[in-house]
Image (cartoon, rainbow, N blue to C red; front, side, top):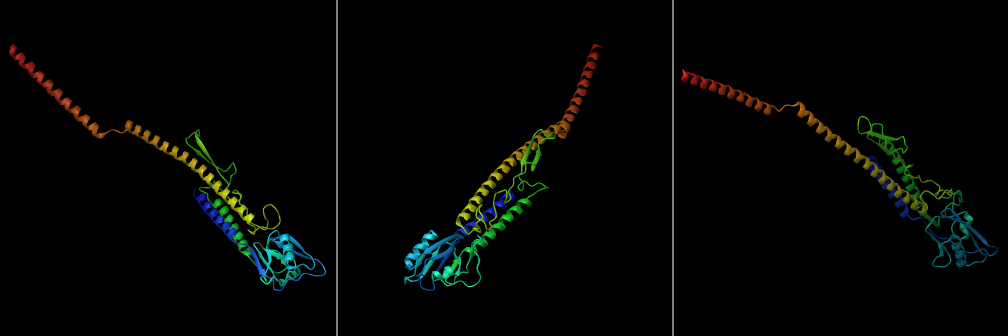
Length: 321
């Protein structure tokens, strides 16, 4: 029970970590450094990524800033692009991480070109993205990734704790194999017994998977708590793990009640047998002393009665003479 209680505390900590990740907003914000000006000779293709997902917007030649904004938001699937109060500069305000494929995609919208080498995007999808523009700020991504590391550390602690919860070489919470059980005999012939089956309450047994670069079962790399859907799936798994722990605790508690009842029964039976044996072998000294005194008194009275009877006979004989 102590092991299960300690594991539940670690799961509660994991829930807190996941909820903290969910409450950490991922945002991309900023205003372009220069006025937007669409190409007048040809259409402009802008490639960007929203939370690692590829997006492509085509801005027609000679488009106004409003037309360009419409094309960008349509490609993004949400309203994240707008214009500033002057009506000339692009404004990006997204509840997601927005990264551009090249510096040309950045400057096409008026954002300053990112300085430095192109890197893999933060979601690990394998997409190559331009260095972040000085006009844009991405917040929350690194924080969520660090929380994912904390979560993974807690899963390791759950497994280690489950494996350390053994007594006299028996561990009932680290292995659910049918051979891992505790056999309890209630009599010398083992005709009454109880088998307590072990359960796997490690992180693997509780079906708690570490957070890595992949989201769900796909290999798109949108893991590390970067997507709200992944965090919510993790929280659902933690709730299921808590239910599993409660079920295991109930099962072990039921087995413990059976053992305690048999123990109490055995103790009462031993007491009854001890009392019976004592009654057969142990004398009550006070009672026996009283019985001895009574016997001695009866003997004295008998002797006195015989003496009186003899004297009476002698008296009668003398009268007859």
